[in-house]
Length: 266
Image 1 (cartoon, rainbow, N blue to C red):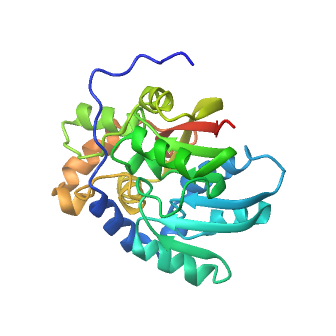
Image 2 (image 1 turned 45 degrees about the horizontal axis):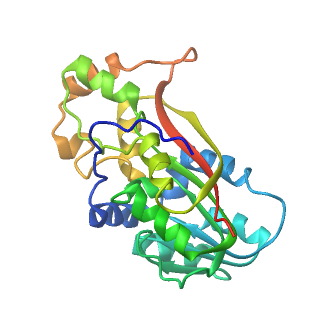
């Protein structure tokens, strides 16, 4: 596998306790605000083969709505999430399924226990691609498959550029590049069948809704948001004026996602 030229520096994802706390706090309203996340997960699920699996794992299961869809093609399905609040909500939503709290970089399974790993919009919060992918490789049995959707560097370009243009300071989590994830594969023993970078665009009527959506689904730092960052109405207006709008009028916010189809060789 040819290596992709890495960035000069690799930014660390935000602190996990911060991520878990914010996701737990957003658990009850998450499905109402995570529209783009649902779109991305649906696209990732569509990449799965029609064949049945024995043991499937959903890393970063959130409220369980995609774990439920995964359970339709697996004999046994488990959802795992870092946030206790998300696990509790998933158990309320889907009491017939199994959900556990856990860390993607320390999966609570023995070697070769799983034959399908699915994860959408969760692994970007890991401390590093290599550890997360090595754990997936460890729990997959030979011939097992992983379907991953990972938010990468290049997301929120409109917001970052508008922030600079308006002179408004926003703290947004840094993300690993797609090249970081692809390079890490060479050290895990996993093979990839396909990889694709896809841009997904979310739309909002105003800047406050856009900022709250990012904060509410864990994509921004704990300080993101007008109240936490002390943004004045004037600053918000300047930021909104600098944001691009589509032809219909709404503000746009882009998520750049790496779709990875991986296999563990025999």
